[in-house]
Length: 577
Image (cartoon, rainbow, N blue to C red; front, top):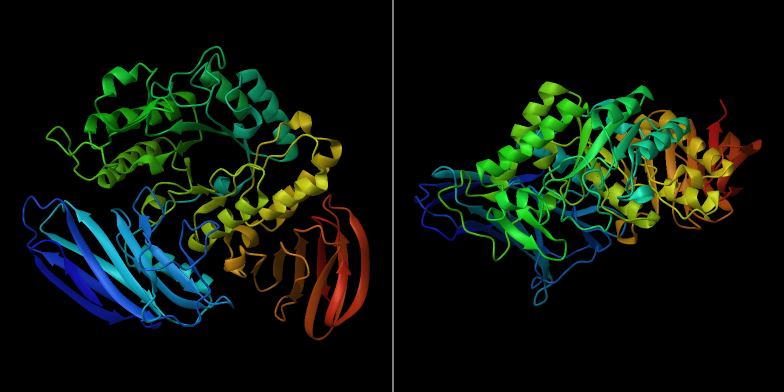
């Protein structure tokens, strides 16, 4: 590996092998000149392109393609993604995994095909910027082991936590319970009476937490963020917030409230105070993006959240749009009135100081972050990571939730709220829930649209996901064919395996170690194919999406067997002793 820097300083690097075979390169810069504010460390290496089917990174979404070396690469920082790139083979093996310990400042990882010689040309730029001291250290992890790609990703997460000091926030059990969101169901058109009525209905379905989204702070219902920044309750919508939250608590539900962290709207009273302390202006959304390098700005935001939790009795916060905290071309340069030169360092201070105060009020405070701000650095502060907005897209929810699960062993992963048209059939609606099976369920359909059949289907899956919560949400995920967006996903422990199918015609091999196998049909196919290595006596129960047993029989499985299964239903196979 070649390591260089753009400044005159003492540059050193060493390498060491971990016991499991991975390589770590430790890089240090010493005697950094005072005033050096654009420091960059560049690492370059290459390796032969052999058995590579695609590329995974934390923000890849639907694009798993390998790029050329003249592409722009992947950018991460505390507010966006994470410094990790994984190449995988057609059969899901690791073909090269690379990670960087610098998860706060900007890192650009450009790993692409060098056309001239068929190698993967790798260039990683670590933008140290203005270092706080005259010494800086960073590490690069390389993993060429022929293991499953999921394991390679998972062990990078462990490396970040154990070796790099990014211990994730404590996750209360409430963070893993299904939640009702008011965003898709009501958007900004909410009142306290409607919220409380909907909470009663949601509680009957089994939801224990409610998230009230954008709209509580403004009478405007035209979207945009022009009225954000004051964070005063719109009294025409909610007459008394403290009493309203208390009413929801009396139903036995917890209450989370939405805040858009970076925005100060042009129509807010705070615009006059902060209009000259912005990193950018979004004319289309009628808002500015606050410059948190100013201590005054951070203090204001922190006090808003602490006051809301303390005075209104909130159980948590949905802190939105944190990925807007990055420098643009026209972002003002640092000045003497700022106490932070680096925007990402300022974000660390904002979240660190805020969480310190919130924990004093409630040590189990719930904090939701959303894709793209899902890296190891920011997980120190949030205990719920949610898939980015993808209304009515089961595919997007599946891909987003599995991507998050692969990189998060501890933090609760939530799907984007499930929503469907009021005329949707229960079977088709259930397919959306099946696509979100390996995450904590968020739901956002007006309950008045739900037929008795819809409600029966929802209760069935709520009960199923609660019964298998530890297995579905906490066990290591095996996600087949990342290049094809995970057509088969499974989890297992010593007793049970759960497999979800999202493509027709696949054959599921029944595990030899587990006694119980549950296969969930995420397609419209009317049958599921299973394979056993040896002749096996089993009891098979066919269950539809409503939880009704369609058929129960004993059979002998040998080789490949077709078993009927309805849309969004499941078959439960128990080996006979």
